[in-house]
Length: 139
Image 1 (cartoon, rainbow, N blue to C red):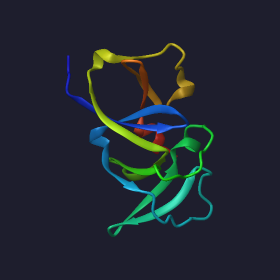
Image 2: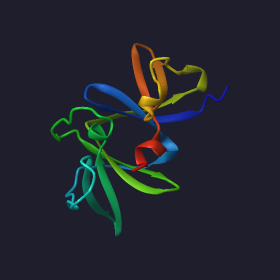
Image 3: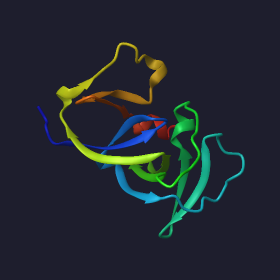
Image 4: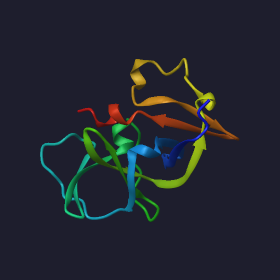
C-alpha cells in the first residue's frame, strides 16, 4: 500500500477534481491570455510564463462542463507531462492531500466515454474525481 501519493485538489463547477502533484509544476493567478485563431473551442490561448510559451485551456469546457466566469479565486494550474506543459483554468484550488491507492475507486459508471477520469477518491464526506492528464492533453 503506497500511502504517500499526493494530489492537488481543485474545484470546477462545484465539484472537486484532483491531479497528481508530480504533474503540477505550479499554480498561478489568472494572467493575460493571448488568443490563438483556429484552435479547439476549449483552448483559451497562450501565456508567456517567464519566457516559456504555455497553451491554456478551459478545463471545464474540455471536460464537457459549463464554464463559470473567471473570478477572484480562479487559477491556472500549469501541468506538465513528457508531452510538454499545459495551463488549466480552474475555478479555485483547495489543497494538497495525501492518499493511497486503496482509497481510489473505479466506478462501473465510468465507461470509455469518460476517458478523462481515472478514478474516484473518497475522503471523509467528499469525493474527488482523479483526472487523466494524458487524455486531457490529447488533441
